[in-house]
Image (cartoon, rainbow, N blue to C red; front, side, top):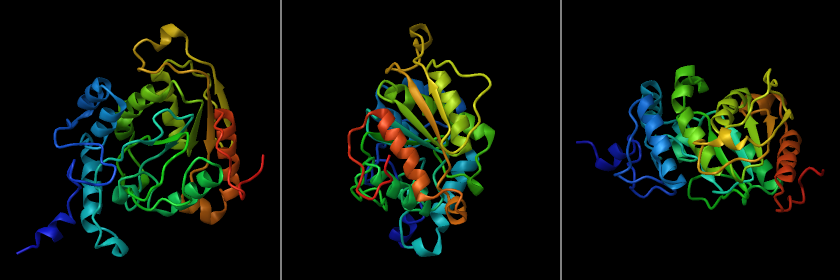
Length: 297
């Protein structure tokens, strides 16, 4: 007979079962298709309820199958660990000056720990930079209950589930988009800077901004490391129904993704990351002092 404890290690974490930072309960409604994602995202009564609904979504069959397969099979170094195995909700400051937008959680990173960029090598590089720049309390992020917190910043993903080969489909991106749009609606009133980690996030940001009433430039500025696009505040009429927090002027910043491929090849280096996050912190008016070993401005 299979030990119940062993079986539990192969299953996604049930909502409300005590995982650190789990925003959901057994009563949290679950989206089963794109239409339900739209309805549940727009109908959430608070940011807390929205992230709870994000964390139990089952709208994309391929992503659900993959995230749960990885959670059951695991990598060799984590075979005795319980994997989160659910979508990764946004986390951080509820009134952030800086919004950090990534692609999707890693199969053995966020999909394992329950927090995006936590427990993988990309996160090791990213959080070290955020710490040096005064946007994170700790230089590392290993587990959901490790005491890490973001300072004046919030972190979200364009797609909330770990995709095979780190490549979500266009349909999966579009199905997940209402979660991102609704979350931005709750925080847009305080966000002054959006940092896009990679070209996929850069593209996802345009739809998110459009949903909040921003007038988008034509043609769209291309993605690049250090690219900057200042956007004026939406006209009041354009913000009707866009979300509970009307947005102001925002600066869109491009940043190469701190993937292993990019960091190992030197395409992106710690000083390059620091330069972007120092720029973001300054533009957002966040007063937390950068650490002594941060890149100077």
